[in-house]
Image (cartoon, rainbow, N blue to C red):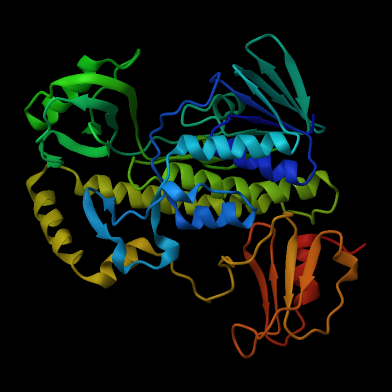
Length: 444
């Protein structure tokens, strides 16, 4: 086996698709026996949809609609001022998982359900993975995509420093006789009620700095939590799905330990707001996938695998900072309540909404992604506006396209990585050869 992926959620399945696309022998180990048609994640960012579109996924758009707003500490950011790339669309996580699982299987990836990793050891040539069933697997690389309570992270010993305040909450898709509870921030925590379909709503509570219960979630636990936060007890008629979440905002110190990598919630956990878990995990997977495939297929330049941590760890740090800011604004202390009121007034300014929604870039091309460029084969791409360059030495890993007029008058060429990131913008200089060697290794 070449790559073992622990965890078959969106992160692990997306990584499996990326590796399968490049012909890398891959197995996914997932604890759950099937994809459950219930999930905490209810939204997909436009930039994540770009990733799926770029790889040719048939995303079921007939049931999708853009959210009119998105939460920031239960203060609402108006998405009407956002660019199309910063919107969030209603699409349940389980639908994304099913889409990814189908593609991974088509690409020859083996998905083994009901499997748990219990031991990990590595040496200079590979990784040995022990399973609860008693079986032992040997692979060149192991990637832990096994969630916030990652066994891989723990077994390898990657530091996962505790954050500040802890939180505990419940999610419940239920039918209630009557629901006139007001969502928002209360002295004891926060409460929300989201209509899912006629007759059914999703209840959510969050409490801070309290002990998280163990064992299966019960109806009484949900009703108790709602009552503690709001002071009122809901009359729940029928339960469709119950879940519990909690922890603190945390980030691993490193995304790589030798031949073992972490991605998704195994590497970073943040306060539940804005569907960041699913979306950031997919982007982790796409960043790592082509680099791991390049190493396996023998053309990766020296240090390429190290760029995974270098590029994604700062993103994780920004997510944690963003989440910590939200948790600070949710504190019931009097001075924080005053700050929250001021912040709410600031959100009436469209530019403040945009700042919180958008990721700033220094250059409109360099370091960003090319959203409308299909990369279905998972190869690099050179947009050659001049029509006078030869990259035959890299033709086995980089395609060349000669499009129409350039996006800027002085742009001659744009080199795009397999993950859609712009690697180099050529404005008439001599850096293309260096950029090709940096990201795609030596020419044949």
